[in-house]
Amino acid sequence: MRQLDRQVNSQLYERLALSRNKAALLEKAAERAPDDTITPEEAIKDPFVLEFLDIRDEYSESDLEEALIRRLADFLLELGDDFAFVGRQRRLRIDDTWFRVDLLFFHRRLKCLVVDLKVGRFSYADADQMHLYLNYAPEHWMKPGENPPVGLILCAGKGSAEARYALDNLPNKILAAEYQTVLPDERLIAEELERSRKALDARRSDAD
Image (cartoon, rainbow, N blue to C red; front, side, top):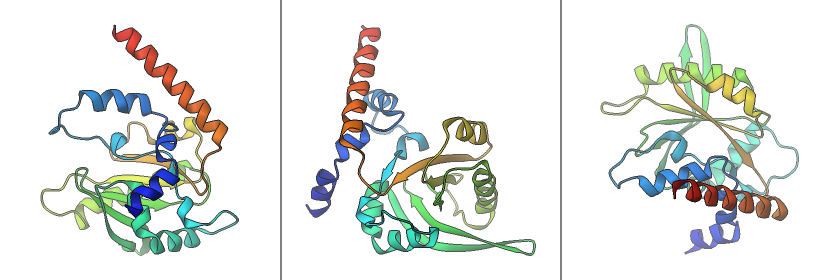
């Protein structure tokens, strides 16, 4: 009940309206059978709203990670109920260089999800780094029967064109999702709801 109360107070319904592919997700959900597989795009929301962290001013990447660990239960709720926490600061050595994956989660239907936090805007260099992690993970981290890992780059902002050119047609599945540390503006929510309603009405009209 406490978790449900937080989702109501944080305007979960309105925030879902901000998803860039909400109409496509709703259309797909209406057609999907219970035993159908789920895609990473359907499983991962964009944007994430992390208002429960209470960080609104200047903060570092380590500050963000520490706050997420302290409020891990709320973060898992925001991610979705198929996510399970595996570990933080997972070290890997390639040649003579050490790397660290900030947060590692397991998705019960997608199988493996690597989460890499970024305080600033998304950059094509982030995709290169995640690609390295995902090439390493099957050999060293995957368990028998699991699917290839999926990379999720949480970023404070992203350019749609840069993200598309950096992430499309890669051999590994990598997604970039924005996070917000405050709730969206009420006017913006209303505009997005109205835009989404019109888009859904148009789809229904085309189907008829």
